[in-house]
Figure: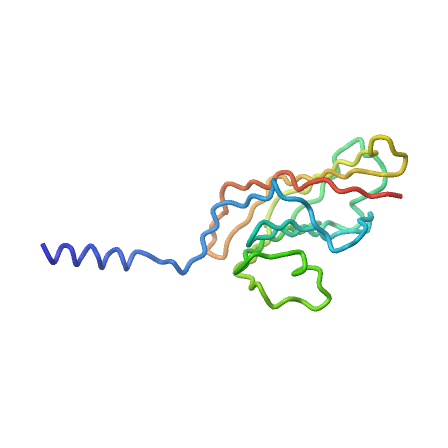
Length: 168
């Protein structure tokens, strides 16, 4: 009986590996868009979302935002035209991490994964009651992240990136 208990305990310790980071979901739908710019313009290309110890960074293709209403959805391919990066940190991250002139050394980046497939979809409309303000709704479609262990991250909850506003 003692041998059986010893075998079970040894099997338990050998089979457990808490050194690997396991990302099961990426959920940024409920958090707002950040940028380091005080005023967003059509030249703006870097946007990010923060969720505790995680960030989702969107680098839009240059020239994709325009101050004109679009009748069609504007599509930017990932990774060919735009880039989406997921980062996991050692501690909670703030916008200062991205915006300070001198880069922060903490929190540490534990894992960084670039999207390998998908699309950024942008719909632009004239803001209600204005003649020169445009609302750009950014959505993500078919985004695929593959970890360093060749595992696809499941349960992606990042369909709605958010809405930004620009003016002429």
